[in-house]
Length: 159
Image (tube, rainbow, N blue to C red; front, side, top):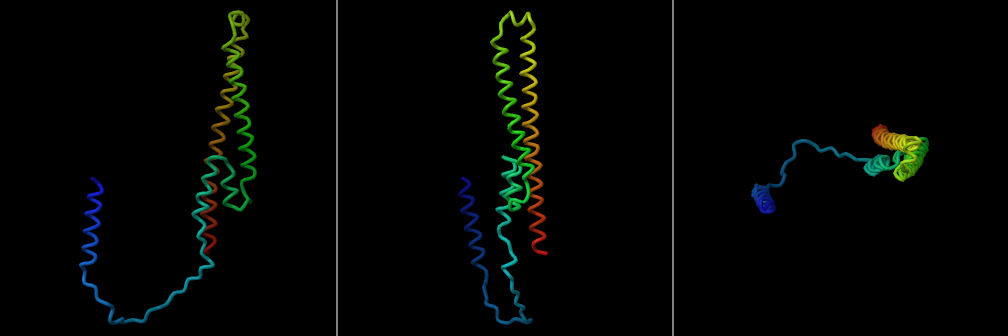
């Protein structure tokens, strides 16, 4: 149904645009100035640089490195890798401790070892959640910093 409205609108626009009287310009009252544009100063790659900042959301520091020709983002990449390793290790520890907790019997309950395993799994899970949230916070922060860097370098390039 929408395509019928679209076709009608296209037909109406084309009818009104071609039904106008078109006369050639016969007289120009003032002289016309010619403007030359130097294409060497125009950078058309800023849109790809803006899209490169999206890499910061997946792996913090990579977007900054791509938009700045590898000058920025080194410390952010190291921090992101450390946070990723911490989160993976804490998740493995949490899963192992929780599986051990599930397999414990009544003897372990009476000797208080079951509570210790549960607390160990719980603490490792909190470390995992904290490191993942820090990782994504770092990614969002790096995303906005790299976009600001692209914006500033694009503006300063034309000055």
